[in-house]
Amino acid sequence: EVLEEELEDLSDMKKAMQVLDKESFDYSRYGEVFAECMIAGNIVEPGGSVRGDRLGLCVFEAASVENVQGVVEILHQMMRRKPFLRARYDTVVGKLQLFFSSYTEQARSNLASAVGLMMTRAMLTPSVLKELNSDSEGYSLDYMTAVIQEFLKENEHNTTKLMNLLRAAGMDMASIVNLMPSKSRSPEELSKYFEKLGLSSLVEENERRVRQLKVTDVRNGVTEQLQEGVPSEQVSRWVDATCADKAVSDIDRVAAVWNGILDTVDMDRKAQQNRVALLTALTVHASLLYLTCKNGKDEVVLLVQIQNVVSSDMELLKVGVFLDIVYVLYVKDVFSEETVLRWFRRGTTLVKGSAASSNIIREQMQPFVNWLESAEEMTPEEAAASGSARPSAPPAASESKPEAP
Image (cartoon, rainbow, N blue to C red):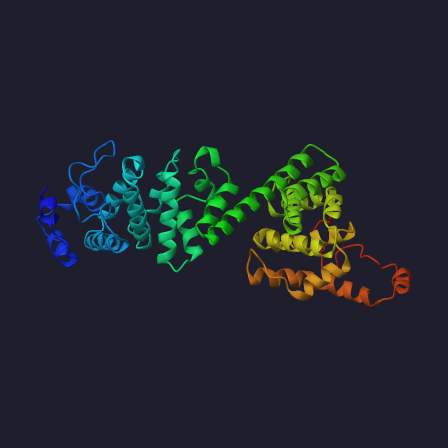
């Protein structure tokens, strides 16, 4: 009640701070009430309604974005003096987000702007956004979009910061899809919605998620069919048809098949056991990889996929699994000499792992590459005469390693 009386006729922000920063105000006890008054204009009742008349100096009643910014600045300054208020802000915003239908469009829009500003200033815990629920009117989706727009505006449209915020909130594009009204709830409709609002960065992010879902479907399908013993030719036909139907790119198609095979292998054992299990699986399913790699570009994509997996596992890296895999797939005609040499000469950049891992792999591959280069210089007649069209074992393989299956 004292707070209402003090703020009722104030419009000057400096005076507001002088009034609010008084020792007589017990913010540890009434911090939540303070936040409710500054945001909603008065105490918020259990059903979401705001008690009595609203204060003119509050987020809900703000007549412009500048006024919203002024109230947020007051809340920010008070939180800097009393850090425990952040938890009170979380509680109040979480409560208000449950009752959108009780508020006007202006109040919802102002609240979204305030929350976007508060997120930028770390005044709220990101997980408060996860408390949003879908509704038939689309209030939650409009609100979340407005929060995102304000956050992007405050952060120079830095999409990376936005995605970090959403991850910290435990949200992704799937969560935003779930905020849509049930009749239009789909990734495709979400892209259209963002596109109408000019949020191209979110359209791209949503399309990336849709693409990943398609790739995951192909990957899981490959794993299931291989575990059921479906022949490679049949799996390959299914992959080609599914990828054509879902418009999956060749790069994603190769990656999906590789990871689908990898998912059939139990890799939770010791390094040498994992090595043997992996090489055994690749020997068995080499024909599928052969059918998947339709040209040199596909072969390079597969090589990079293998490199990423091995580089991210130090134990596999140490036992030289990359060379073993390349050798097995080379013998099985999945990789050509030209592909291996092209990959080695251009020094493929890793998606995962470090430069050090890449250097280790290149060192392990050097003897094999040397052999390929020497064979490359021979004429077909010389190669046939020497009987060295393909090595009988990886040139760099250690004698202590078990032979590749």
